[in-house]
Length: 427
Image (cartoon, rainbow, N blue to C red; front, side, top):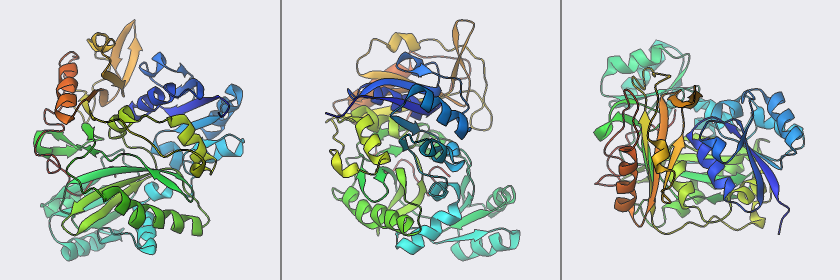
């Protein structure tokens, strides 16, 4: 058996809380630390007040703790090169280098890599002027898909039949990618990569729009579920063969091997799965139900990937049954977010074995738990099937309240696979 090690999770959101919970279940992980973390993570991790965007400070903390593994959760630190600073300090880091993280940091670069690797994806065009955008909209036609080329916290995509709306969105960005519309339900597939080898996790589906039925503006994600019984049995194998491995080979050939999570956002079209876009980290909230079902050790898996020896550990194993996550967001989200509102009821779920409260935007204030972000908490439940997990999750949601709280009521509802989608994941 390998030597136990300390794990340090970088970030503040629901993804990082879910990672911390999974790492705490790994017998090889002796201690879990988080920087800066959140109040929920404090139940399983020691928190440290370090700026996640400051690579030198993150590396210094990891060195001080003698951490055996650093897991960088959000995309912004990865695109800023935090993983490079940690790796340069001689510490294993799960998360791609600055150069490899461009797969998410620039939609245009991502499309260039896909084209070179022969990855099935939507036709696209990078545009920097209004005239270029107009020409691209004409060529691809409606519905129009316009993506901010840069990071936009899950809200940089507009999918619309309104040409004026598409042009207005493009005008707010320095550079955009205009794409062909992909018609089909969306799937999130996470591949744990060590630069040359990859293991897939169980697929999930998330719900991006703020309102029921896939209406309203894009958000960072309002809920998710896993597994996806409506997908083809060979979906994962197909995507690993036609998308993930060619992409890893292409990046390695460019001298920028990808070590970390390659998040493949897919549209399941009539002609097969096609990539909407890549992200360079686990998705939030769609990784939450996946990790709830993970039976094999997470820490050992991520450490092996970070050290380029993924083939030495077992592939991920998942429990039978299903998991569902439902997000509660603050008043005004996604356009704005109300902060400082007192949250009540989370403690009532602490004793529920099949239910977790995942903190995303919370803070402590005067002895109370208060809102501190757009997506505040998520209720994650495990059940014998999707319906059972869904019922437990919504029962948990009913236990939590704060002023202006909003959530969708149709997460993982029938008909599975066609609730939403429509050409935009994280952007």
